[in-house]
Length: 124
Image 1 (cartoon, one colour):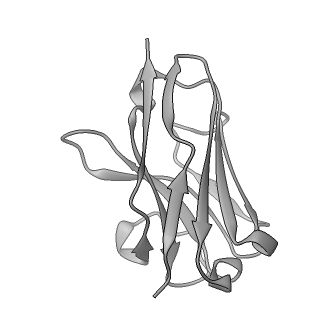
Image 2 (image 1 turned 90 degrees about the vertical axis):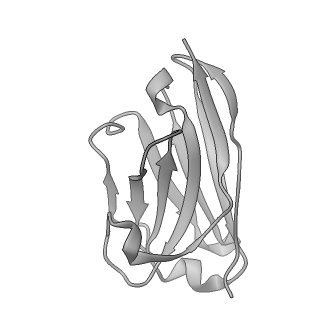
């Protein structure tokens, strides 16, 4: 059973930055696509960004393109989400998810391991 643990969330003012980290319990994170999703209160869990096992390919939701950067360190079994120019609408619980294959999937159903989430709150 793969375990994912997110960290790095917090309260930040609009325009600020945060770096989220996702620690995986197994080395499979170095092979399989990993993604970040987020869920605001009363809303669906939405795709944010994904990265392939090699780290050579990434995909982003339109709402975060140019502001967020996903990266990974396979030697440490870590995946990161650098979030810059944060907006109040970025406020949500952010989840790390391990995929079932090698594609940059955006659907929740393509991910079968999830972390517990980390809260990001952006004040205006």
